[in-house]
Amino acid sequence: MTKRELEHAIALGSHAPTDAFELVGTELSVGTQTVTEIVAQAGGTPLYLYSEAGVARRVAAVRALLPTGVRLFYAVKANPMPALLRAMATRVDGFDVASAGEIDFALQAGMPAERISFAGPGKTVDEVAAATRAGVCVTAESAAQLLLVARAAQDAGAPAVAALRVNPNLELRGAGMRMGGGASPFGIDEEAIPAVLAGARNAGMRVAGLHFHFGSQILQGATIAAAMRHCAARALEWIGQGACAPAWVNLGGGFGVPYFPGERALDTEPIAAALADIAAQFHAQAPTVELRVELGRYLVAEAGVYLTRVLERKVSRGKLFIIVDGGLHHLQAATGTFGQVLRRNYPVADARRLAPVHAAVAVSLAAESAVADIVGPLCTPLDCLGRGVALAHLAPGDLVAVFRAGAYGRTASPESFLGHEPCREVLV
Image 1 (cartoon, helix red, strand yellow):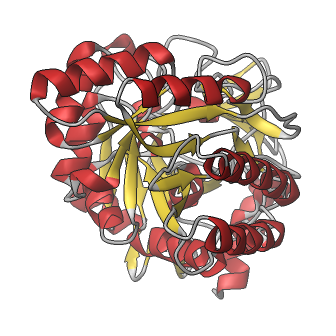
Image 2: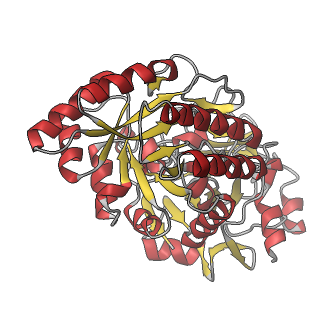
């Protein structure tokens, strides 16, 4: 099967296609290894499978749209799987973390401390102290956090250095998750930044960076481009006024992934054009400042697939349920209970028959429903990985693939709920 045929096969229910995986015959694979072989080697299902080649292709695509000198950072919270982090550490310029635990993950993956930034609205005294001792830059999200950094630096006998996270004053439309623009627990309001910079300067603190983050899961390239232009303009204004002299400015990211039927892949052309203009402006007005773009979901989501095995077929009052061994406790986002207002299906497929159902099978299905609900083993009606999907042919032992599972999957799910076994993870 050609790559185009693979993309068509995976684009079930008018989902956008993906090219992170391959096929061997009609079976999903990573390179020449089929999912049957990978599952056997991993010891069974449920299993998260990540394609290193898929991640590499996406990173290369992002690199291609970034102007020379603009650095790419990975947001560890999207997926902190150790093997994935080690692979990512060789491909990106730095990590952004959101806890002391993620600092440890980043350092263990081989990322130098000076290329790690630590964001998050609630940081404890111990976390700030640990970051300071490790040489990780703390991104303060309030004036109170700046005081924590100052105290930690004093205790460590180190210079007081921090970055500021900025809550930009802009109206953001089309974001799957707004993280700036209005009242927010994230960052310092843009209009308050000059006063905070003055306070930091008077206290003898050095502001090493400005970190803008305006939203997440944005599928309109023009929206991201406009937001980045706004953030760059504010940073240049403060630098030009002499309010700060940061070593770096993080313009954020927010690049979205098309999860649901009818959604289209992000148009990156407006973003590339905006970044080219911004880079030129900084080269002219603040040439020593390093520009950063920070992405998480966009780099890894499409390179991950969640594999679960069919346990049972069950018909209840004329409705077919395909019961599988995985579910909400491993991939909560696919069940619609992780931020969706109206539940919609992730792309779901028969992992070993990614092709039209054989005619003989279609005839045998004529007497029963052509669609089924794919449900997990948990004792809750929320545990549904696919509602009304065209997979009524599935039988016990078959493998179900849930695509776009590489970000906010295992670590964003209630894995200990009801005491089921943890899932497996492999990077191939």
